[in-house]
Length: 68
Image (tube, rainbow, N blue to C red; front, side, top):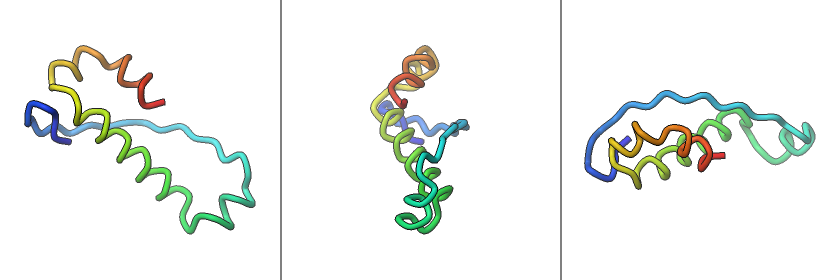
């Protein structure tokens, strides 16, 4: 991930999700797990890309809250 101050970082994350409608998940999405992974990855990149490395390191709790 490239931060606002042009530092390349590697980020590991954990995503917990729940499928509320199995029928919708199967009928509307080809691969629910891959779609969820891509959504989480894109969201993380968008949030972290707007911050500097020092902001990311200092504000992990705020970042987690903003991603939810």
